[in-house]
Length: 139
Image (cartoon, rainbow, N blue to C red; front, side, top):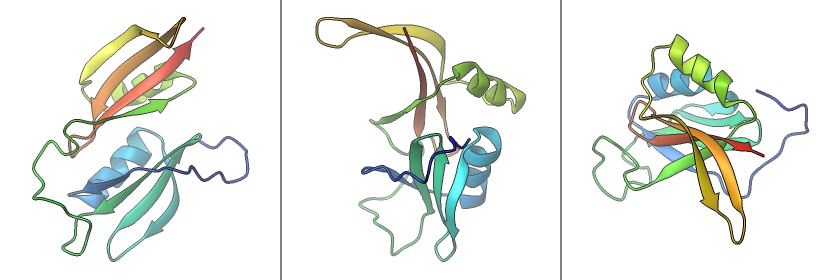
C-alpha cells in the first residue's frame, strides 16, 4: 500500500531476523500487503512498508546480530503494533490465505492520560512467531 507521499523514513524501524526469508517475504508482501522498498541478497534482506509503517526482515546468518540461539516463537515478549486505516481489509487478506489469528478482532479501550482511546485490534503471528498487532483507531 502506498500513500502517494514521497518516500518517508521512520527514525526507528525494527529489523526481524527470519529463519526462511522466502516464506517471510511472501507472508509480508503477498498476504499482508506490505510493499518492498529495498530488497538485497547475501544475506537476504528486505525493507518493507505498509502505508507509513516500516519494518525490515533479514535472513538469519552467522555474521548477523545474533545475541542467542533462536527458537520458535521468535520475538518473545514483544508485539509490534501496526496502525491501519482499515482493519477489515487486513482481516480479509488473512482469511483469504487461511491464516489463523492469535487473538480475534475486538475493541480495546486504553486510558491515555485523562481520556480514553478505543482501538479495534487483532493479533497474528508471522511464520517465525513474531506477534503483529493490527490496530485501527476508533473515534
